[in-house]
Length: 75
View 1 (spheres, rainbow, N blue to C red):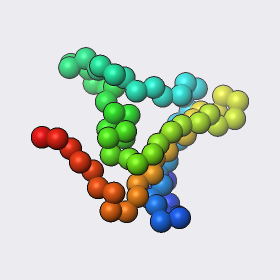
View 2: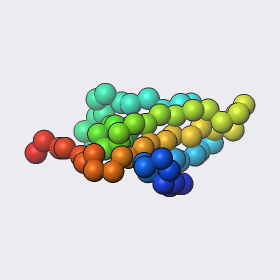
View 3: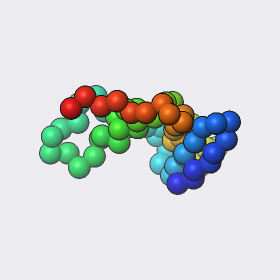
């Protein structure tokens, strides 16, 4: 994971060698071990996305957090 402060925002990125770009899972199974990560990123980040890294070199998923934007979660 890489974190960088620039242009008054915190930008994080994660790289892996998987060839497929991520897609949010709208309805993960309750017993599933995964499938919730992008939903959490979408909830907490002000912006996020992904892009392929060259031919068969993987992908980067990135997010940005703005100062004082806050996260509002209904409880």
